[in-house]
Length: 218
Image (cartoon, rainbow, N blue to C red; front, side, top):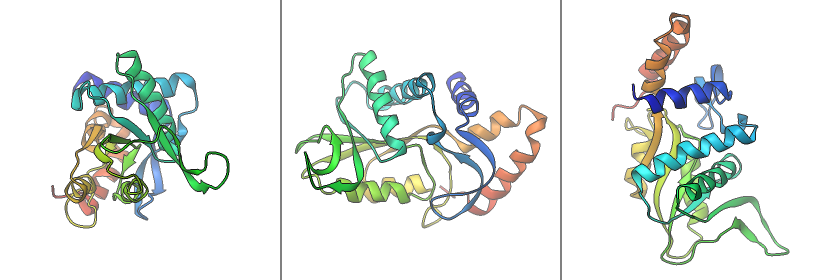
């Protein structure tokens, strides 16, 4: 396993972002592990997360200037920290996020921060994609921006689960909307990491059993 993947998984566990147990995903599925960026609670942790996203951005998008969009609520801190980390790497990108309810006074509108102009490209930063539900919600919100293109989406973990078909939710999103979805690690990286310690045997078995039923075929 690449060292940065190991470092990232260790970071997720240390920050309490990666948990094992019985959870219900936004898709309604009962899942044996949970990825929750909302459990990042300190400046050091969110700064570190932003650095991982910035590294992924620079590897996949390069020095191209886009606009980062962080869906409320968890995506907000990811967008802010990622833009800060990118600026430290010499790439100053604007960011914005949505309100859950449109504001009808003051500056008004559904967006906070930089609002992309026609012809600009947006990169969505999310914590995780399970069935693609949250991304489709984001695309519906962003459809209100005239002539703005989504160039890519970045998430922490590819869960490698079926979406609406036997394809992975990430692959379905790519096919449906025509942009790539990138992840820092995937669930099989997490399994590989856990298998290094026999104490994790129960969690590994539960995740594998879950994937046997809900894992994507491509």
